[in-house]
Length: 439
Image (cartoon, rainbow, N blue to C red; front, side, top):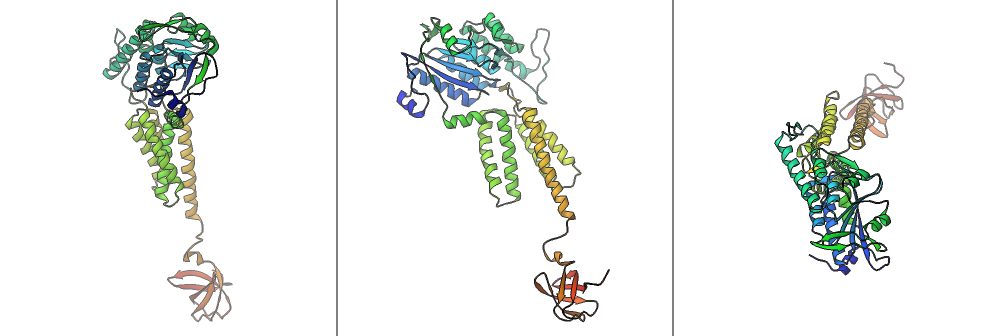
């Protein structure tokens, strides 16, 4: 379906041209490749075809992503009716894993100096990973791993053949996790250009001939205006939460917020925060295929840490909870549908576990202190207080303690107006003694 340029302008998909006789649309793809990324690139291609752009430039920096989303992006690039350029930039950027497929699928593949490409093997990590042994011919011996690897290698081989790029290296990037820098990629004809910046890129593209829709087309980009296509606010939110580290934190935030609200009803704020985190976590896990086992282990781990507050296990439940939380976090995105994506152990999982340990430790310490602290509320607080006898106690009478009148009994006669000390509370009656009397 095509959308009128006026409608696209209203949606903010692109800005007003800066001048010149033609323009190039530019999009930035930075981070995990997810369904949100695929949708944004497809919309950008549609918008570029509608508004007559000379080309669509995708500036790419990614460590990997979801295989299904990668397939959608590759399909959109291969079927685009305008020239597409994927430029791995800025310096130090990656086109790893899913990024390798996307780069090689463009009409023009370019890299900035100091960038890298490759390592496109399906990743199996963590305790649930299948064995990775290979036979004498280099084939994986596990069925699942072999199926996924065979599919992805055939996929990238077809892309390389279609774009007339180095098929042999493309297959090695999948089967052997081969990764190379920009200079080597240019030498091996993995990419077409190495350019310092956009201006250099457009200059090197000038006069280059590409096939669009099976027909030759000569690029003329020098002097073209640049229009940057922006994500809508909602697309930015989806792009942000489609990050494995953010998704894991949302899961923890949802669980803790709801647990606090259930434990202390009426606080509202923890429950509201937990509910918002839960909704965002559902969307995040919908964008990123995840391991149900890893998610369950994380939830059970946090649950055991909380349960330690109510059961005396001398820290065993707490230690088990920390271990299960870390194990579940490592496994959360350990699935063949996702490549090059994982929750950072050092930057997210370990600090979160330490933070939970500190919070739970403070709560436990507070509870332990409250058990040894003198009672300050209720009738039990009366014990030890000093009041005065309103009437003579012989042995019963009335006393005034803590702003209240009480019926009291003493083991000895006490005159009216004398100071008395409460020694016990017996129902609605106090037992007292003369305040000057020693035990």
